[in-house]
Length: 182
Image (cartoon, rainbow, N blue to C red; front, side):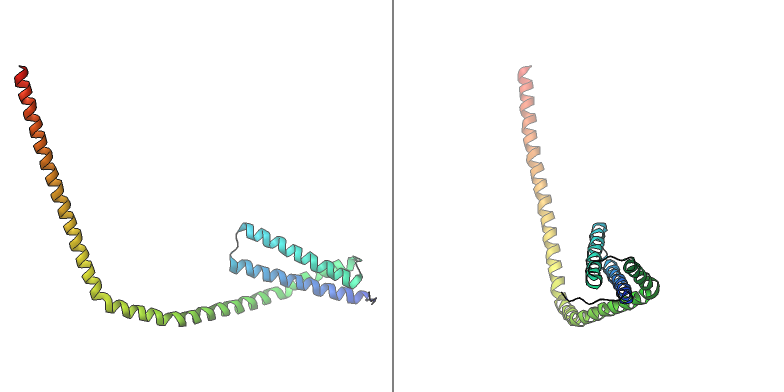
């Protein structure tokens, strides 16, 4: 292992930059949450992942610049970098990232519309060409429905007549039985 003695000023500057970098990662995660419309569980998982990543980055940085010695000014540097980022750069970077992502999304929608519009146009033309066939189909379908209703009506009428005849026969038998019983 190479031993390069870093000065305290260098360690402080690196820790401030690392704090700003962790703030930038948090802003990226905020954008993902905004555009991804994450639910409660997904947000919880994302928060845990952010903290795992930030702890990994900060511990690796502490190992690299101070050989694992956690010094108070390094922790203050992380905090100062995060505060500088969130109160200074964050709003501008968020606006820039949102502008870039919105521009990309609009460009993708534009390209998709360019590809889909000719297909929509062709489908519209085919529909207008096939409209007379549609009308013919509707007429045939309606005739079929009318015929079905008519046949259903006739079958009901016939079945009623059968029932009526059957009931007449029953009534005659009852009358005959009543006459015989008297």
